[in-house]
Amino acid sequence: EIDETEDGQLFLAMACYEGQTLNARIAGQASNVLLRVDDAVNITIQIAEGLAKAHEKEIVHRDLKPANIMITDDGIIKILDFGLAKLVGKTKLTKEGTTLGTTAYMSPEQTQGTEVDHRTDIWALGVALYEMLTGKQPFRGDYEQAVMYSILHEEPEPITGLRTGIPMELERIVNKCLQKEPATRYQRVDELLVDLRQVQSAQSGEKSVVAGFKPATTRTMLTTNKWKILFLGIASLVLLTVAGYLFFGREAESSEPIPIAVVSFENMTGDTTYNYLQKAIPNLLITSLEQSPNLQVATWERLRDL
Image 1: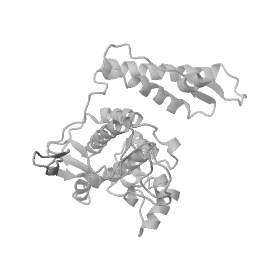
Image 2 (image 1 turned 180 degrees about the horizontal axis):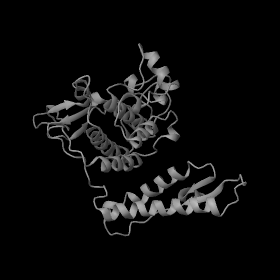
Image 3 (image 1 turned 60 degrees about the vertical axis):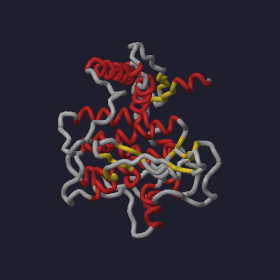
Image 4 (image 1 turned 90 degrees about the vertical axis):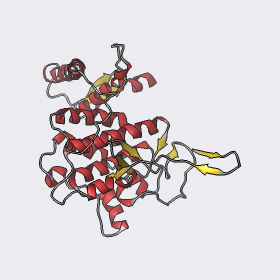
C-alpha cells in the first residue's frame, strides 16, 4: 500500500512474512537428502495457483525463481518480487535486445530478448520443480553465456537418471514445462495444475515430513471418488471410442489422418468448484489424442472460427 499520512508524509506498507525462501530450503538440504516428492509437488501447486491468479489479470512475473518464493512458517507459499512483472500487451519494459531475469531460470524467449507471455512463467516453474526434485538446475554453465546456450540448445539430464522414485508422470510434466518452443509447453497454468493434482493424488498416501507444511489449496481439486470416477470415465470413454474406430473402423493401409473434434464440456453438477474441468477435460483429451499420428484434432474454438 502506498499512501500519505495526515501530515503529508508518504509511506509504503508491505506484508511481512516469517519463514524461508524456497532457495534456502533447497540449499539447506543435506547433500544426500532432497525434498520429498510430495512436498515438491505441493509447493509447485501452490506456486501455480498464485501464478494463475496473476495470469488471470494478465500479469506475467518474468523473474520467477526459488529466491522469489517464500515458504512461511505455517507452510503457505508466497510469490515475491513482482519487480519485473508487466501486463500482457503493454509497452515493453526493456530495450530491444536486452534481457531481464535471473539467467538460470530464463525461458529461451527471454534469453533472446523477444516478447514473452505467461508461458515464460510456466518455464521458470518447471526449472524450479526440476531443482526441487534433483537439487540441481537443469541448465548450467560456467558463465552466463554458457547457461544461455544450454537453455537454447541443450536438453536437461533426465530427472529419473538423477533420482530414483520419481513418477514418470511427474517427469513428463517437468519436460512439458521445459519445452523450448512456447507453443509446445503447457499453454495455461490451469492445465499444469490438473496434471500436478493427479500426481499429488497418487502421492497422497505418503505423509509429508516438512514441519507445519499446509497441504495445497484443494478448492478446485476433485475431492470425492465420485467426481474422480466421472472424470476418468469420460476421458476413458472418448479415448476407447477413438481407439476402437482406429482399429476396427479404418483400413490399416490408409495414411490420411482421421479428423476428430474435442468439444466443450459443461459443469452440470451445480457446484462451481468443478468449473475448471470444463476446460481441463478437453485439454487433457486433446493432449492425449494429439500423440497419435493418425488423428487430426480440432478444438471447439477452432470449429467456431470456421
